[in-house]
Image 1: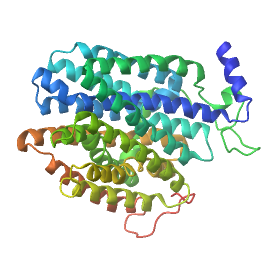
Image 2 (image 1 turned 135 degrees about the vertical axis):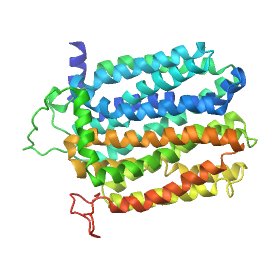
Image 3 (image 1 turned 90 degrees about the horizontal axis):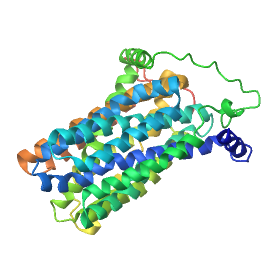
Image 4 (image 1 turned 90 degrees about the vertical axis):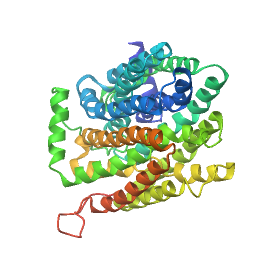
Length: 435
């Protein structure tokens, strides 16, 4: 009862309670970003301590990235069944279990189970899909901006956690760095339990931007989340737009989380940059990532999403192709890359969510984006594992950067076909400027 009274008191202020829900979701996604970014800091220390190869550590991270994506669609269906608050709490507890047990590993299979399975499932339950569900439930206006802000939590998580984790790892050990994340996750539990609200109607509100004559749609039936997710996948598999969005997001994952998010720190360390400096560079990308993603949300509300994605993927491809050759490992060279690449990192999310909503309707946008996000993580997992294998074979990451850059150019062309009828050069009419 005390919780309900607190929420109602906040709801009576001039600030729409949807912004409070966005704030809570942002913190959940931020904590999950810290969990997902930790292995990139721990790769070198773990390899040095146990004598494991880059292929072994990359396999564990790759599995975690894969499960992070595959769990997303089922998480969206589970949110409809048991609620966002319950799913978020399960996610936080699962991630805490993975980080809490990580300091006790001494065998490769334990690394794979914790970094891969446990953390993969936990972070998958707290994926960007959660942001899409919150945005679609609580906002009729500013939805793309809200999605951009929540997606930027990934950048904020890097900015906050990476330097701290690298500093603790260098000063003490990677185990104490794991404990830091465990403490943060534990602190998140009461915040989510007390402040997360499922729907505006639960506290007598309409979604942000609703007109005075706004009518709430029918409450969705609580169906089996497994079947709901699989049925949505079945609908997606026969949709041309679903394949175009999924394949472009496969490339997005391969060129971000899979390559830069996983291997940028060891890539820099092997070229004479200290681990703390490399982590700081990756974290600082988060500042430009935040700017780029939030700006992308603003642009998505005003311009054609297909054209935005064309430029995002094309510019990202250029940065990856030039990194091994043009951006030297001086402070100036790496700073240039972090600014250029950081602005583009996850700017693709708001226009992709908008296009998913246009193609499948707002009610199903979160679910369908979950499956599209699954392909993002398949791409992440594929390049994370492949880059580790190629590194062990050739001793460098050059081939991995070239492959990812070329894939970005393919994605840049493919996104222009979204929303167009087969055999026609004209786009299908869609609502809103941000088609």
